[in-house]
Image 1 (tube, rainbow, N blue to C red):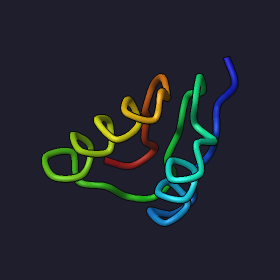
Image 2: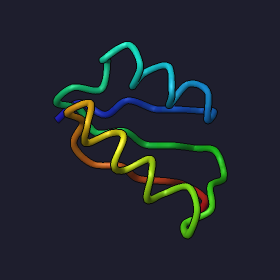
Image 3: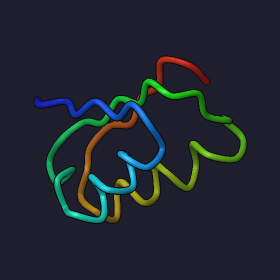
Length: 58
């Protein structure tokens, strides 16, 4: 399974908006808040047919 690396919040949005995440895992290296960010990011990724969302820092 291919994994895309997002180094910023903006790169995550860009990958999703441009349908690059379809069928791929996404790993974010930027810091995110599990209670606020993770949930909507996971929903957005699933809407764009992405697979798994992981973080280095949360």
